[in-house]
Image (cartoon, rainbow, N blue to C red; front, side, top):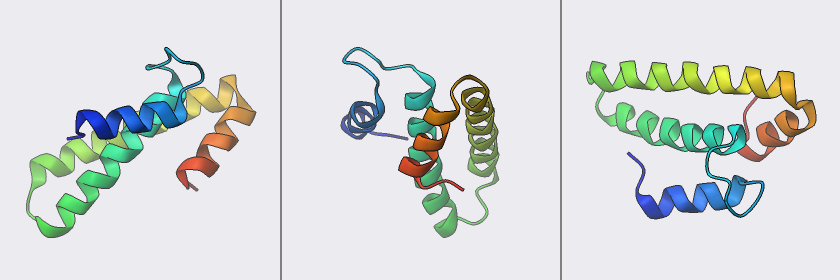
Length: 87
């Protein structure tokens, strides 16, 4: 689970304007941060299947957001992938 301060830093880094907290770019960035944290957790707790299911749901959700972004804004999609070091 993301702490409020860490989430605010991620939002600030990826927002398009001052009040942007829910755009696709921000949502993908938050999901990516949560996925990274949960992946670290699962490396030490290998048998935590409930968290593993949540991780798979987050990955699927991020993939859906990225597909939408690719359809709507190809340049923004490419920039976001480069920023987040995906693919």
